[in-house]
Image 1: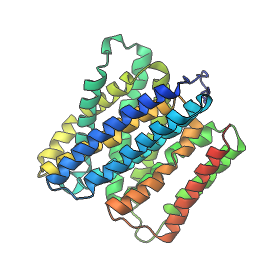
Image 2: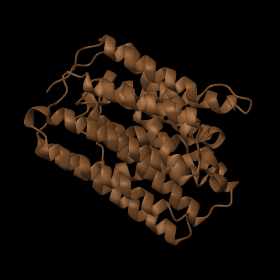
Image 3: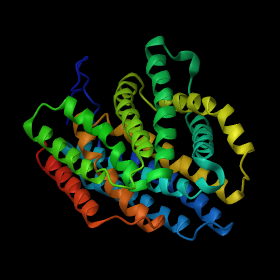
Length: 352
């Protein structure tokens, strides 16, 4: 099955893949998550919260289940099935990684955690992909540099927002980024309606209250703008690179930009092995796994569908925030999250 880019530029057909190739891609992601699980387990033995290591296991399970689903998918639907599996794995990994990172905020601060996360992710990407910098053309360098700046904006604003207003609310507001992509790219009434309903549910979650932290909300909205840019730029990178070289270089540039501020933050905080392990684990779960999944997913599904499907992130963030961080939500907020899940299901059912 082929899909076309829904934006105003050239129409780009996404690459179809066989079920066997899909199993290989998702299997590689599961392997990366297993490494993260080992790192988190080591951190737990060093004195982290006991939930950290075991909590990584569901993410690996998601990736492995997606691999099995891809293997059983009919040849004509393999691209679509794998796209959904990749997006689900990316979302689960990102939210679990954010929860693990939040546990290191009291020691390293959000900026310190983001810096370590980016350094670890960069090291892994460079070692595994070994990009050929000299072969990049000017046409390829432009989206790579843009993606590096997007990472800077999206990561730091989201993490500071999580520290101020909690994981569930911060991620829900960040979801307005892909929601805006879904609205702009819509070609059908059902897509537009689903996006509007999901947006209304997000507004309910962020409704003003006496204890509202407006700076935290503003930072979450900045992260939303970053996520919208991430989707658009990753779409371009997926079309101009046959592999993950562009993403690897983008994350490396982003990591280098964090060196000065990261050094200052780490020098001003009492660094511990436990906090470093948590930040490093977040680097794998929040950056490596979603990056690998998203680039491949955006080659298989339209950008508008990606934007609406990512409404699963607030749900996963709320659940993981409750289980890992003990951040409870009111019944109204759970109802809004349920509405987002329903909208997502309707969008998937209406595809075709």
